[in-house]
Length: 395
Image (cartoon, rainbow, N blue to C red; front, side, top):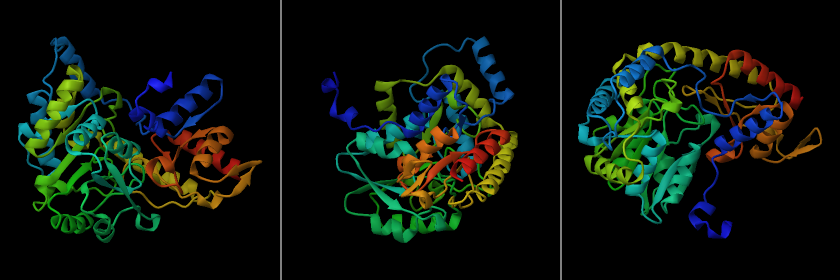
């Protein structure tokens, strides 16, 4: 019956992170001991102070439809958070709360991208960027970055990618999948380019903001020169270990926020009432309250880098944020291991799943065919066991 499906969905790629997680789940159901290092999901429980706020909301009978763009009290918390952490100043009319940061991104694409509009994507980029853009008729324009430069685009690379059709640039810092973090000077150099192109908008995905080992996060929206063209996207899934609570939000120009509110009103309406009340508490607290998770992620990063340094053919940089490593594994291309040919990152990722029983994600999904993404959002024991399996399998 596939002939009845729209060409839109036929041309839509399956999320490779979710596909690998599904494959790992299938193997586990058959009794295979799979170590999952594919999903970007913290293995911590949601902090108790946030859970208590949710329980209180239930007891206070929060059970009705919520405003499409979020509770006023939550918007106040988001405004406070943006000012405290990012030096960003917003009004309530500039904030939209959504069912996860992914919906915020989809809303932005829906209201700004026309057919054949070009959207610049520094590679590697989060797996869904490209397909969200394509769904709206846009054209992803990839900027290839290098592991030697920590997978960060330069001002010159940005400038050379701009054409008369360029509508937007989407990027994340800290980056999924590379863990790269743009510092103030690097952002300033990008801003100098964007200053000259007044019709280009910027989507800054800052969902990993607090998982930053440099100690300071910088938002590109804080630069006055382009402030009125930046939409900042964030949420609570990663730093607060609240992936299943599904709350994300954006702050941007009022006219864009109103348009996103309009779209959301026809698609999902307002986000979950209990989750919103819990997020008020999460955002009002000092970020130091979740520092124990960040400290543990940093310790795991150091551990996995040390372990991977002993795996032949894995070339890693040192990521400054998020909870991923993105090793270049092209050393193994056009080689045969255990009778199996490895010609690309996708084949390597599948080989590791089936032979080492470790789930990773191919770099092809993120716009970089030479790498694989390994999440260290898992216990140290699992990380040690996983890398030992990989090393043994490849030896």
